[in-house]
Amino acid sequence: MTTTSPPGRIRRRLNHLPAGLLGTGLVLVLAVPIAAITRGGPGALGAAIGVIGVAVSYVLSSLAVAWADSISPQLTMPVGLATYAIKFSLLGVLLMAFGGSTWPGLHAMAFSIIAAVIGWNAAHLWWITHARIPYVEIDQQS
Image 1 (cartoon, rainbow, N blue to C red):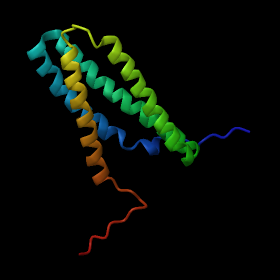
Image 2 (image 1 turned 90 degrees about the vertical axis):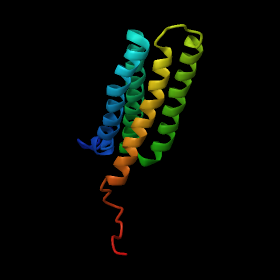
Image 3 (image 1 turned 120 degrees about the vertical axis):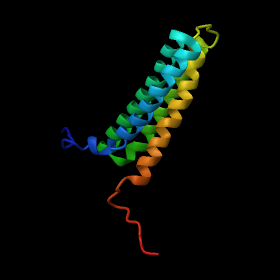
Image 4 (image 1 turned 90 degrees about the horizontal axis):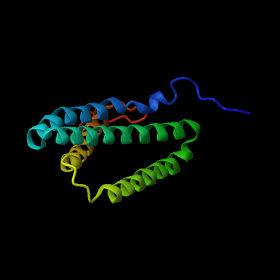
């Protein structure tokens, strides 16, 4: 017996993605020219790689958690934690492999990663405070 989820079931769990992608997109638009001015072409490339890497990481996590939730809400936590552990393990491997690198774009990439994480989370926070969540009603009378 196979179970299939109705069309759009996962998509409904990804309503936050446009806000996060907009936040990282804004960081990309700012970070690449700044890195190009301060670090040249390699800096611009490093900044772009950093921002795009953060966006891909958040999107993959969101897809994994949305898929798990569409199967069973009890899978959400284990899949989310496993995704987190895998991503940070891969990040650790990359840091060890390239930690001693002298590539001129490395610092721009590191700073753009920090900025992209802040941009994504700020946009996500904005989305959370403005989203209409059907099962949460805020009493406007005071």
